[in-house]
Length: 412
Ligand SMILES: Nc1ncnc2c1ncn2[C@@H]1O[C@H](COP(=O)(O)OP(=O)(O)OP(=O)(O)O)[C@@H](O)[C@H]1O
Ligand SMILES: [Mg+2]
Image (cartoon, rainbow, N blue to C red; front, side, top):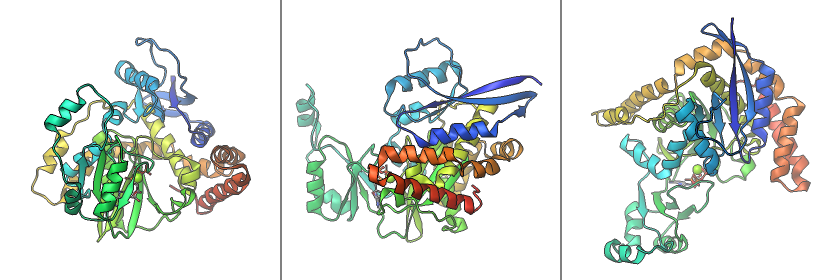
């Protein structure tokens, strides 16, 4: 049988721990996948940053990108590679460039998702521009901020329309606090969003291709404790709702890797944050869930490389909007959207592929996550993040949590 080597590229910036584990586990798996009369092998390398000719061919079949949301040279290289060489990339760079939090709220509202009421207010301050004064004088209407606050209702959250990493997020309880927060917001364009309060559950559902993981999330805990270690904390129907929501959002925007945050209030799951260009992948926050991420990344990237999955560089929203316009309940619509999303991510074909070609990944990973390579990757990440006197303590903490995952069978 002829052989073909598939090349997987990692486009990296600050990431330390997960690429080490991804590379080592892929090597350990030593894959030889027979597909359509060809034996496929896989190698992985880190993508270099260098000048490029727009006509220069690309060697990679798949690139896992963690850099281009802020580093433009690599983003333009990736866009060129998709257009000229059919490269498959997670995540779609055009979609990431143009679809921030705001777009995702508007689109999912149109699909009927119970996104909390959200307003945009023009910014408090502006960067100088020759047309600024004339434009504002002529067209910017004075508005009553407090009246908008009353209409949304308190508590509400002020947060950047394109935010991330909790920067500029303020919980607001009355009109005075709203005025203060607005005065301090500067040039950033802000959302005012109704607080989902009270709530009795907060879930981060991480999606990677047609795979997902529910994480019980505690935003009030310190960073290393925010991702709780429970696995069986949702009812079957909650799991169905959250997984469908996540898959629909990700398929709609063409995002292979994204996390969707939802809060439950009075039994209703309300998504509040689901446009994450570069979701948390660090062992220092994921710990117990970290092996799932590495395995899921390998499964989906190997599948995409082996099957020449199309990048779907044009998004197709009309079929979702057609369902949205139907006279049906949101639950019924969600089922219909989910069918499109599962189709988009080739759910059945993917699982068949994993059963046939990657069935040993759980066993190999179980052993791998007990090795020195993993311990060293944890230590390197901890050293980059914690002061010297905390390095041993936190390395041990995260290591123990991964061993706890192994003791539980290491499935998932
Ligand atoms: N509408 C809301 N109702 C209740 N809590 C909210 C709401 N919006 C934001 N929060 C709280 O503020 C936190 C940060 O908000 P959000 O997730 O929207 O910002 P972010 O900058 O994207 O953060 P991250 O990158 O960590 O996800 C949330 O984890 C949640 O605790
Ligand atoms: Mg968030």
